[in-house]
Image (cartoon, rainbow, N blue to C red; front, side, top):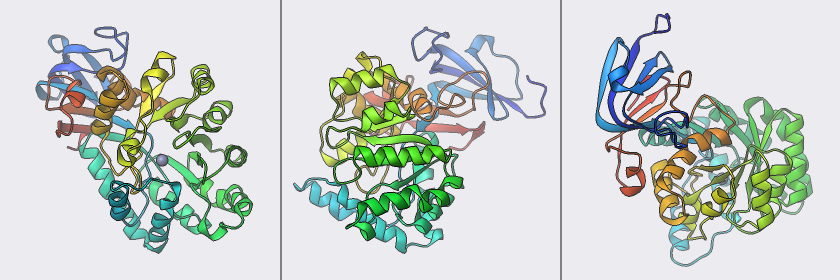
Length: 395
Ligand SMILES: [Zn+2]
């Protein structure tokens, strides 16, 4: 194939191949090719097309009439943590409302944990996500809230992914409860200096009870000056300035987007900021669903992600989020699958993942179903039966 010494593999007899390339196959946004084949050369995709036209390769895998799609790109998670919030979830499902304050419980447990405990917990949930088809993931700090604890969380995360986000501004540290301005100074000063070398992104929870618009602007601007690119937890629990700020600062993503004014939707439609919807959070807090249909109809780029965290969305399953988005947020199955693959890549400003095209990373999911639609049609069923990451079959 390419003349390199790596081996080549063809996956043939794919009933439905999702490429996310609208110039291919049925010319839809998913670029669906029927009776398809994919050739992997080393860690990259080398060829896609109909099985009958596939070139000769070293190895051959028969997909058996099943569907293949790009590995999921989970662009929002909080996986460097310790402890458990079962009791809080149980209480909430028994009638108590969710507020941002529960994060403090996880902060205390995370500070008390060893590096080894945090890393073992992280890899456990990464393996869990991989088995469900996630091949690219972002994860954040935010449960340390001291210079030492935030920087070690990012160091641990960076050993497992390139998509690492500094979230010292998750909530005001309990140590600074009487002086939030001093905490913002720490987050934008000494803590930022310690954390920036380990991260690509900076994030802030812009919400009542966390950080207001002015604080969020100061934090993201300081991060940008240190080479970190912004993303924002915006408009999750209430209306607020987060989405507008995200667009103004060219944040890669405004995440949650549950409470939006028409002006917020217009702003998202006019900029490059992706609206990342996190239905696991609404599911796990019995909250109002974000209106994906409204965003899509306005021309906004939408991503779907798990928000996997021990408090408000303890799922690592992108297929579960796809099913929720289709059932309760007005997305079609095609839109939800696009949002969980190409949409996630857009939210991370990546073009090498989230698609099955020549030159893309060979990250693939094989479903035990003939079509990607089954991800929504058969909710809760473990359909992922094969996963390739960087050309290596790992599931
Ligand atoms: Zn989050």
